[in-house]
Image (cartoon, rainbow, N blue to C red):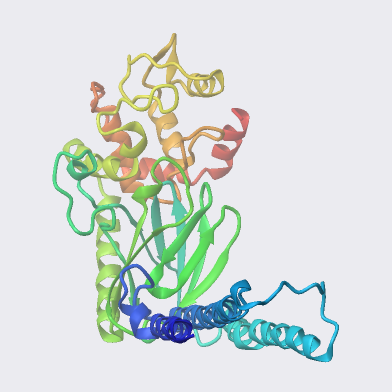
Length: 416
């Protein structure tokens, strides 16, 4: 009996200790320290559930062990013959646990969970900033609609680390070139969508995991209470580059956020003005090399050779074999002939990068990249990997192609 009581007491103490909020906030195998109201509420409900389960387990195990030792056969006890409650005492013993479970389900757990769900769904009230997040294979694009600012966030892990030829750093696959910057203490309404497949924007410290679905606009919100850098990942298997879609959020105090916002808008305007002019071939190739590495290299590969049977190479003259559905579309656009890749016209090249090729792995980069980046990518591809056209595609050429969306849509439909 003494051992049984000690076991039961120990189980209760362990359950209560593990269920405490500080223990879970510090445990590296559990929740990250919450920095938003939603994350704090989620952790509270998690701890409440765990404490309840631990107490139920301890109580049930205690009764079971008591019954096993107190009514064992060696003490002269025999198995009961009844198959259900018959006496008033038996009915009471059956009803009390049932009522306890109902109270736990609908009161102890149900009410906090209900209020947590309502809080998560309340995206508009008191929101002072709106951010639109668009997932693409395999990057995130962040837009501040009211501020007329947008940029793309790409994986910044060096390719040497991806190839295993260099030691990894602590933020391996969790670093980006441009993080999302948000103010501390303000409610931020987040709109999510996707350009291709289902992605999922997940930042554990925010308690946010919201799917980004093509053709739909999903909503969530955050109010970050502590400045710092918070990391997350795409949490929906979205293709071969799924592991290369990290999320980095830099939370700044409101005055610092406003300074960053003003500087970012100024840089964007200056870049737009520079891109509006005539760029030299060398400048375009240098810019295109960087843009290709972040936007195209995952599929077409750093050496431009693509993936056999799936992603075509960039170099003209390279042999390529794939399904007729893919090779026919390349041939119709002037990029495939007699089993080999050929270099089509500049206009077709721009059209493919802008609008993609429907029904193939080639996505549309028009919504993701600006005119200068697309012009640089096309120029780089036409003057690298063994191609030497000497052609310099200007941002104005891409802007002109953008202004004819109806023609491009008709053209894309023609080859479906």
